[in-house]
Amino acid sequence: MKKQWWHELIGYQIYPRSFQDTDGDGNGDLRGILRHLDDIQELGVNALWICPVTKSPMLDSGYDTADYDQIDPMFGTMEDMKALLAGAKSRGIHVIMDLVVNHSSSEHPWFLEALKNPEGEYGKYYIIRRGHDGQPPNGWRSFFGGSAWEPVGDSGYYYLHLFTKYQPDLNWENPRLRQEIYGMINRWMDMGVEGFRIDSINHLKKDFSRSGEDGFTNVEGIGELLRELRDNTYGPRGGFTIGEVNGIRPEQMEEYIGEGGYFSTMFDFTCMRYRLQSPCWQGRQEEMVDACRKELFDSQRRAAGRALLCNVMENHDTPRLGGRFCPPEEISPRSKAALGTMNFFLAGIPFIYQGQAIGMEDYPKEDISQFRDFATFNLYREYQQDGATAAEALARLNADSREHARTPMQWDGGVNGGFTDGEPWFDVNPNCVRINLEAQRTDPASLFSYYRKMVALRKREDLRELFIYGETVPVFEECGGVIAYERRWEGTRVLVACNISGRPVSLPQPVSGLEVLLDNIQETPEKTAPQDGNLELQPYEALVCRITA
Ligand code: TEU
Image (cartoon, rainbow, N blue to C red; front, side, top):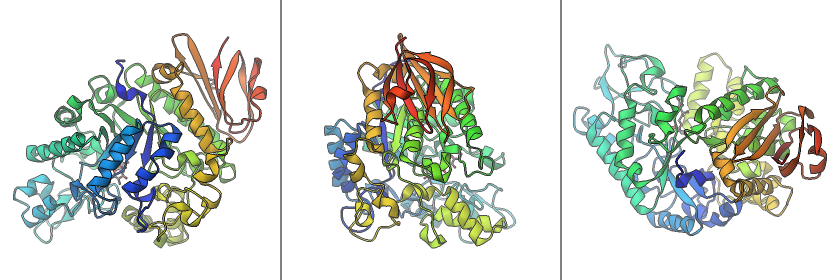
């Protein structure tokens, strides 16, 4: 694999509305990110992905853009953005933005024009079609519930929205629209943005002859659009891009992220999809971990030597990881550390989500009114239409709502966890008295200190290349509930072994000559790493060792 500057990145994702408020309006802002750049640097990461901060009515948390060239006043000003870019640069941190171009907001001036005249110039910026007999053009369903078509008044026209009705899909078949988008991307890059996390990008192309998701997911011919997009923007500028790509065929990975691919990397969402709360896994943690391991190693195998995946355990669309993998009584700093370790040392580019390194947890709601996301309310209605009672629908949201990831960052144990002096836009989890950065920063046994050690280990001069380019070799695959692999590079071998279960495990074959590099049970490293014999892993123990013999 040809070396690239961005292979060295270890990323941190910020959900800005919940990061830090500095002006007392209860919403996080760009100055809040600026204020915490030192904390981010303390963690050791060298890349930031900032979720959308451009002008938006915020009906999908900024994933509904009303002006691609302006910062939303909620987050601050263009001057704040420039200050943030400069502050990050001076600390060696590369900043990427979220690029949301499958759709805009329904308040974007293009769309307002399109509504006035669906046949006119701006009508062609969107996907607007005639219905028939009072019915939408076809039966496509939105990802967030209901029909994907919304009538344009009583004109007989409908516009397509794969997400909420406030997010009309842009028409990528229109070359004028494409040029507008390329211009906008280049303006951000001129300003110092070094790349993008690219939202919902595999839905750009539509095929109206197909029913269901096949009509708008990875449609034949999408590659031409993705290639042209790259060649007119981040490609020639050497930008770093992460595609939010779901559901491509295994053999397409190289086309997407191999050398000369459409993007630098794409998320491996494997770990996000496994949830103990899902009806298919309830109470069967070991089977779930085994299935997850198999899928993770399959994608590692496919990428090996060809591409680097972007490895993630949490993001703004998924409940917190402790509850996804562990029964409630086993969610602890130790189990969170083991889960973090399991993913962090795989081949690829790791990204840590805000709050993950201090172990933030889901905050179940007692009433539907405590949620904030339009998509949540859609689901709540849909669950009830499908026969659930209101209480059951709420329980289901509490089990798997993406909003769990969006509670404000817990900086300290004070009022509102130090997030705001005002009224927070979304309730702070009261467990901030226990789980917060201030308490963990100075505690060498804290999860935050452990994450710092993980990052430092990945960056260690003598192991850096091994963690980026080394082979990933699954080991102890027969051992239920354990995820273990070796990383191998030019004669150096490192073993990563994580026990994702609440019981001790003895690995089935003896191992010898282990030098412990990292252990999430600091008190007993010598016990767990015998010089010769079978390795014993305590419940939720994670070990990273150099194999010296
Ligand atoms: O998420 C896209 C999304 O919801 C996907 O998981 C989608 O369901 C998938 O592509 C199906 O194949 C992104 C953002 O992360 C999310 O927060 C936004 O709400 C959404 O796009 C719309 O912009």
